[in-house]
Image (tube, rainbow, N blue to C red):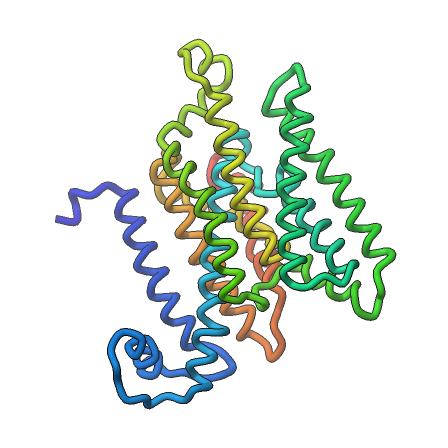
Length: 338
């Protein structure tokens, strides 16, 4: 029976199973011990009445700390990996990542500006999201004025806008209070999911859903992006429309993820390559595979981040430790032919 399914479907089933098991395991690990029996009781009590054999503190840790963080890890990892796969397809560049259009640098500037203005966590998130979207809007405006290759115009405009926002962030760090604001900005830029709450999960979920829906609806057509502009025009395919839809949707995913997690690099670069090795280049399977694999990967890294040492390690550091060697593996020519 299992043999009648293709490779892509088999890998998707495997990733769903692996992710589900890792989510349950993630509830067990942490500074405050909660057993599997107690977790089942906490969950079961929300469905049917039962005698409480766990403490109220366990229930608080479960619902207020671990559940939001685990959900946020899966959402952010899935969003960054999906965006990376989309950008690599749109720009036909295997080294493209979610920050190629300046979304990450825009978010960094927005967050740093909010911290400088003594903003709350909500203000920091909203400011990061706003400037992330603004950076990509500016890229789209400037790239439209280009008379040459649209893909090259997108990339060069992204580099320009990203450099401007990066300079702005550096200036804010220069004038920030070194005893309070500067450490907060630096920690945010290193990436962390420690501030995840149920409210922030709800905030990013609906935005990410708006980004995921069009990507999943057009993922069959995304294979046409490999034809190139001239071939597509010859066949009467409006490839620019598909490209804009994918860019806007991927930008929403990137902006939502970065606004709540800070700068988490490499996920959007390496995960699509791993997914492509598993299911091939067909976007019908590549997009869902990247999403599941990205969520699984970031959840595993986040478990290490909060349990490896007595103090939490910024998650961006750990993803870089994994991503940099893989990048060198690709450059060596032994990895995927890109």
